[in-house]
Image (cartoon, rainbow, N blue to C red; front, side, top):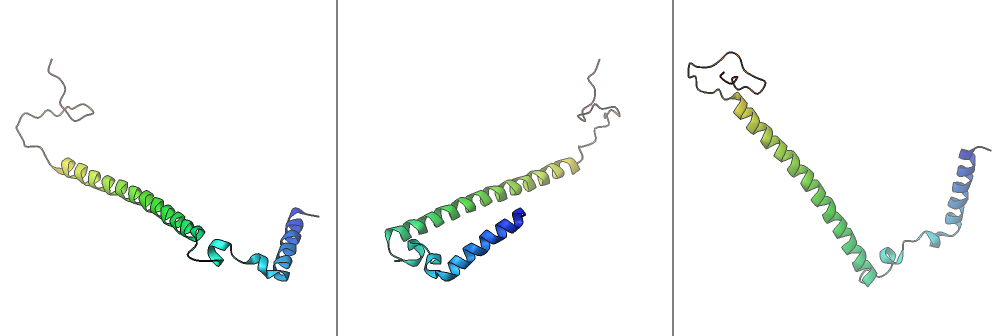
Length: 103
């Protein structure tokens, strides 16, 4: 007997039991019971706090990408601006764009 066959039989047995006894499939007391109980209020606060965490994380990611966009635009603006011509520019520069030191 393969593993898939065993898993399928277990799932079929569980589904059959749920169909024969549907009260076991009802929701928990927090969802199905009194909506003004302490458990339901705690459940609602848990949902709100988790939603707040998700909003904070997504806000942080968005802020990071906005920061990258602004930084990229600033670097592009500086690199596209040409320095004023003084007539003393050297055609030889090092890797950083500055002229070599005078001997």
